[in-house]
Length: 380
Image (cartoon, rainbow, N blue to C red):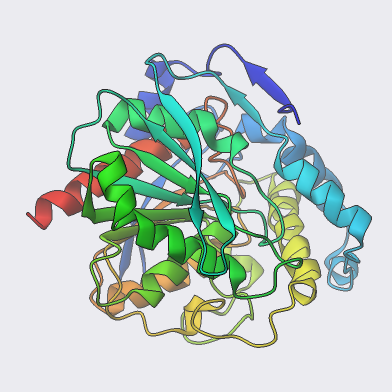
């Protein structure tokens, strides 16, 4: 399937990207410090990014924002085979712009699962990558039932170009065709491979594998860190707008309410439209996953945060998963885990794969690379 749109040049200049970086400010959520950034042309620090407003999420937010809450609270989309097929097709349609100038090798291979299934992986590498370097291991999102590797290709090639370290992405088996916990087993199996044969093949440091996932992939990434806690499999983890509290367990950190979001004046309905469209997807799809009850893998929010590796988290301030992200950052921070949280004001859910369109996506790559470098330096 072809991507929705591809442009030959970024939608923003390097000067604009630097202006976005300059908006960085340290804020506090209780005793948790975090970084906020916003687009310089958003009108205000809490304004919605104009590129987001012009895209499909912005258009949907306009419609969702007009529906009264008491109606949305009762809406549940039936997940039929037709709707699932449409959702999966939509996961592969994304807009991005060409960013990469260097020659980056992209190669597909497989890793055998315990049941013999060849787990597809994609490796991004360059002649400029240093032998013995860290490796970024990516697990894509898609609500556990969709998602592919293709929409992320340009972003990971740009990451390799910027930071000269390989990236390996896994195309794990999806729910509901492959019952829980198959997708976790696939992701963990590739992580094991990276600590052995994969490290030798890619010439990476087997003790410097950083696992990253976006949305549902963030849940799977945390699942890898949880399963191998106390080992050297995961040097650090990067959780991007992650689904961490699938079953909605509440405690002193997690008690979601509309006042958690702070839209700019005049954009309240639009902002809550962005939030609630993701809430609707989460609520509609949970019963379809076939996961009977929470455990430390599928609902990592209720697992023990102590002993996790250094953790980077990022989320849009208008993402329904903002609460998952901030609450888990609190628990990690309080457990003594080195934690960095970056929040992008005016952004909703799922922007990493729109590289070159959203400057926040490139800034996020820069944040991730700097986090990896800092962790490696602190553990030398």
